[in-house]
Image (cartoon, rainbow, N blue to C red; front, side):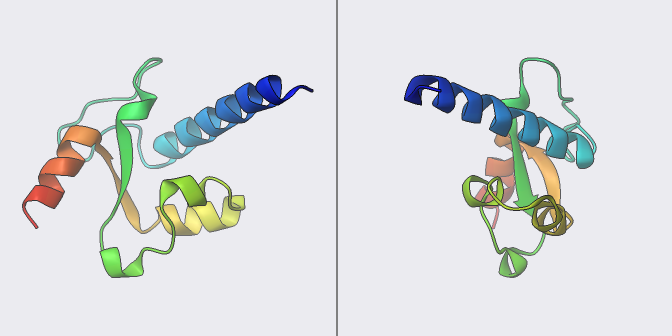
Length: 91
């Protein structure tokens, strides 16, 4: 597999994993209620309820084992990017 094909494969795999974990957390923003559809997976963020318990950011978490991902996601709520920024703005 060439480097370009491998990169595309990895991007698609990470996209599928993110969609899976968005669904695990309910598939919609916990604040405004916008729902996952075929085109908007990238607007969702995993927000840690207690930032002191945060062990991974998504870019590192997505490379971890399924059990580690679930353990970390159990500390999170699902927010759209807009709501996530609003939550942090008020901190």
